[in-house]
Length: 395
Ligand code: SAH
Ligand code: SF4
Image 1 (cartoon, rainbow, N blue to C red):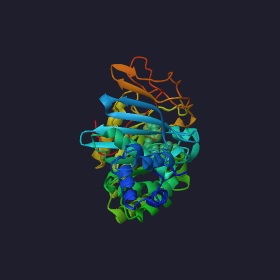
Image 2 (cartoon, rainbow, N blue to C red):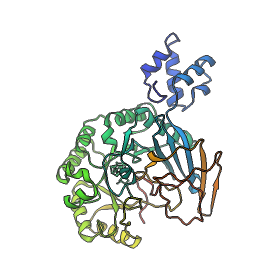
Image 3 (tube, rainbow, N blue to C red):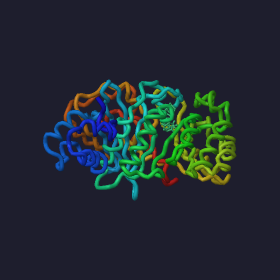
Image 4 (cartoon, rainbow, N blue to C red):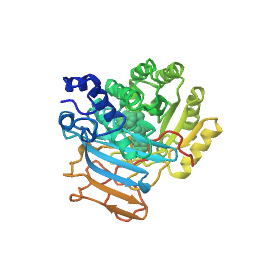
């Protein structure tokens, strides 16, 4: 059975065969413009609402919802119908609300420093599972309008190209999000970048670089062996020429690994000609990777060095709260689903749980973020920083 946000207009029309044709438009508007459950589409007859509710089930069952920063960050752990789990993070900032979505349960790319990579590949998400993450975040964001979507949650979006692109079209065509507010983050899958360059909708591209020479990048990002830097940079250049969009490079700063002056020089040489924006992310600890992140002073020094070399650079803000989670580092697939949804609120001074079920044990894949909280009942959050590459203030 198609899930609610997998179904296209044709599917909806087939479900509503025999009804006046305007019903299809009403239901579609209800789902995408008004973000309603069929049960709340009061412009439809009751029987029809019930039928749509039954025949278009939701794909995501909330397992845990965590709230922090006075409500400015919300993270969900969702259970999928086959037992897999994925996470979604909604972040509010002045003038913009961003959702970070997962594109796969797990990831096959094997980057050693990434918790999702450490957990391995589960499966591709369906288009409806991706779109629904955005719809549910958009609902939650109200009365604010969800403005940005970044594909920086679990998984490699360009390894699930068709479904991800179908989701992008839905977000643009039906939810009304502008292409300039959609960002796809990739580890550097060149055929995917080439395909993106040929699409009619020019979305922003973020490339997770982490190293600017092949030896180090082969080590940190194994897919570099298949898609080495020179070819990757050429693909980025073609992308920019074709779309005129922004390119950013993500760089997780790893202590004494990719934070040396020579790394800054190599990165600058690569980024400058592309006018790429560099986003530095101090590496967050994960269970399977021993090397720590670059300490704050080293992060600032690296940033300043890049600036001196003429690179446009920001440091991704780390809000330092217990749920400031972790697009890209999530490995929720292994978690045992709690029976019922649980809400956890976290503030720097207090942790308040509005659990309706016994507190779940920390999912095995999750690590506890460094935090200044007293002992917390938060559900073993993954570590990390907000994924919003969009103009986070540098420190
Ligand atoms: N697979 C895609 C998108 C998801 S990962 C990609 O790799 O781009 C989202 C971002 O989180 C990537 O930039 C990734 O390199 C980064 N990331 C992964 N693990 C991290 C960690 N432990 N600390 C900081 N950033 C991390
Ligand atoms: Fe996959 Fe991205 Fe993690 Fe690498 S960093 S393992 S590509 S999710």
